[in-house]
Image (cartoon, rainbow, N blue to C red):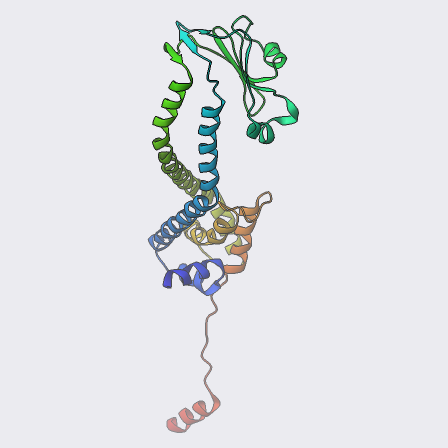
Amino acid sequence: MKFIKKVIGSVYGPEHYQELIEQPFSYSVKYFVRFSAILGLLFIIGFSIFYFPKMKAVLNDGVRIVADSYPQELIVTIKGGNISTNVEDPYYIKLPASIDKNNNQAGKYENLITIDTKSEASVDNLLKHKTAILITKSYIVNRKSNGQIVIQSLEKVADIVIDKASVASFLEKLSPYLKLMYLFFVVVFFVFFVVFILFRLCYLFLAALFIWLIANIKNVKISYGKSYQLGLHLMTLPLIVVYPFGFIKFPLAFSLLLMVLAFVNIKKKEVEVEVAQPEAIQESEVKEA
């Protein structure tokens, strides 16, 4: 409960910031570390709820599509960096209907894979066959998601024989490891969040100068180090609404919100002056007389 009050006070609380000026730097570091840990946990939980089911569906669909798409009669042999098959060239593996609906942009592809060991590995042949992947005798030609076309040599590929049974066996062995992919993504996003927080701490070295300037404009005399300390608290709301959840999206949103919060929260502490009551003054004068 006390920590929630600190979070609320860090969002808006001029009195809270007046108290922070008297607190040691370690006080704010502990607050920021704890706040960042909670925010990171919420980020990962939120990502898991909204995106993991989609990722699971994509992975499972990918495995199913590969298993269903591989032709029963096709046997591909790779030996010494060269490909040979038991079918007549060119051999086409049609694009599955699910991929056709979602990823086939403007009908670019009619085929998922085209095997043509007699043709050259070129962009022209890739386009001619209207295929996503073109396999020639010694090369694989494919188009990346950004439109870039890549030609890869099979020179370093180990000798192997591929048929429907071997593909099914490989996918069966692969399935248990798909669950580890979720853990992998959790670790990746945790590392991403840690790097993001460290970047914000570096960013604060510059932002602290503006916080110091705002404080001096409002006649609050603090050092640069103290302005950096206040910045650890002022970043509370920007970290929630701008990053990493992205509720607010416009250029310099983080910096602008940080400066607004600094201007609103940093105020000069009013000194209370006790004014003696008239009756009390009269009584003291009578006693002196």
